[in-house]
Length: 252
Image (cartoon, rainbow, N blue to C red):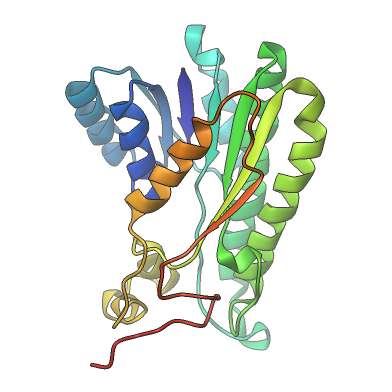
């Protein structure tokens, strides 16, 4: 079994590579940070004796995506599971004060990047007459919140695309699942706030967010259901979070 994971060098993506490798799956891992990709490859191959192929590209750039995936040969053409994990938030401001560069970065990564990868790999799965695509969305794709406008819009798009894929790929024996986490402590907030680690830490003050491995375990569980079972849609939240904005925090 071969699993293709985007955004594999940190957070949910990295934890997902580890759980699949631990269970004997060969991996194709992608990301923009070549050094991290190579370090992860070395670690996983040494620890779990699996085959790991790295593809270094910017998911926002269609040609880079196409060239990288076209370089796959042999058994790596037979991708069983695609985990569309790459995604980000940039900025937290009202629409009228929004930064257009932030908007384009989110749209290009969260929506267009997912499409570029899915289009190519879904066609490989169609040839193989089987496969499973798992799209990582967000609670922001089910609700909206103040100052989350464009990020929420991109994750709503992921939700809609997941539903559309499920219909389009149904005749080809390809499963499609959407997994929508609430608050997960990763580099997400650091990226959103342009590297401001102090501001990022405050997002999780006084509460226990999900860990990346919590989401990775869920991804793995979904992927391991029997062939006649598909988990269409799943929301996973910290036990102290009810909605995107309703969170119980301990007083400091």
